[in-house]
Image (tube, rainbow, N blue to C red; front, side, top):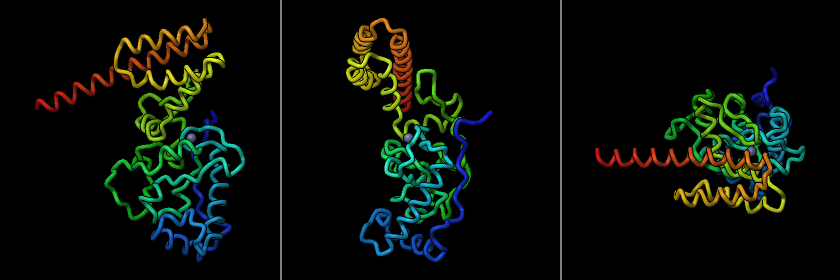
Length: 259
Ligand SMILES: [Zn+2]
């Protein structure tokens, strides 16, 4: 069976920069991560060529999908980002290494930002770690997307049971936002915005009566649509899970205080 999106083959040989030019970028970049977007940098043209080649390579390798959420990207480099898997401010020495770059949607890239993605967050590697287990999130070139994440029957990005990278990736890229947006699409157009805002809030509520009230309103706005009612039921399960998780966390915190 064909996988949803194969992991990308890493770009190992640049064609638009020679080794000397590439070496210049690596040396200069290691000193200053702002060079990535510094328009005053004397070797700006090299950066532009590097960025264009790397983005083009991974766009096609990733089957034109975001490396984290697998949202389809359009073939216009303005609408997707070169994503540094080890972030450029924390690891400027790897900023111009193509194997540390993938393409991501702007939303995933923005949320991921400079968050730590290494399993051992204290590690200061001399070379780019090359094993899947070195990373706590799904790695675009070392992991298969659908071993860790999938789209469920109502279009949400969901972790594969048993995967720890799936939930970590959802959390680091804040995919709950797009998930709720997709759920709101099952409601009538006139209610979508209101339902989306309620969904964003209800996952944070602690009070059971507040939760019940919100779900009662959502069920009314579903207006007997089986699709929308199924969404409400699914979200209710999700909120119950979150409540149970909070209770467990609180109990663990209390136990830690006592001991
Ligand atoms: Zn994405």
